[in-house]
Length: 198
Picture 1 (cartoon, rainbow, N blue to C red):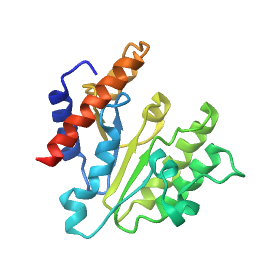
Picture 2 (cartoon, helix red, strand yellow):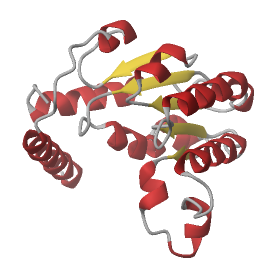
Picture 3 (spheres, rainbow, N blue to C red):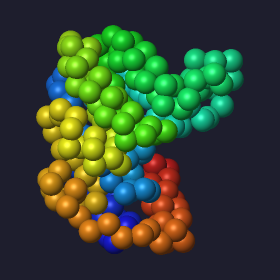
Picture 4 (cartoon, rainbow, N blue to C red):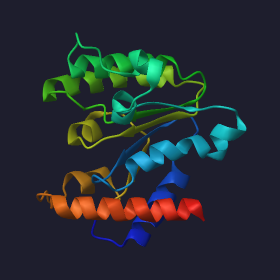
């Protein structure tokens, strides 16, 4: 993160409040530790969700890796399918189960080869619009340039300051300083935690 924690927090709040819940598809990108998962977690508290008694249905690595007790059978990857097939199964189940609520597809590229990502995006483009009819819509969170370039979406959001998908895809890619990533993400986490306490 090349901005202060306060400025990054302001970006998170701004993006969080601007994501439309009008049945459309939004795209969210951002570097690791920039606040994408925080936004996903907090969407349940948006007025549109709470007022209508709805919820956020999501597929995410946290859902697939955290301990959910007896519900693990429904949220964990199966042993007999590769990660990519599990991703597709979760995508299919979640998009069928939103019942008027809001859907978040968090990193649909996880565990997928480039060829499989192409297949997943093709499936999403073919089915998602129909499945979110009559719902609050969908947010797709990704690190994949292919997903950004090829998935059909209505609204663009980025937590690193890139105003357009093209600007994000054309950015100069440099290796991440892993110690800086750890330090910055911990600092942001502490800042957000302190804000919540207030």
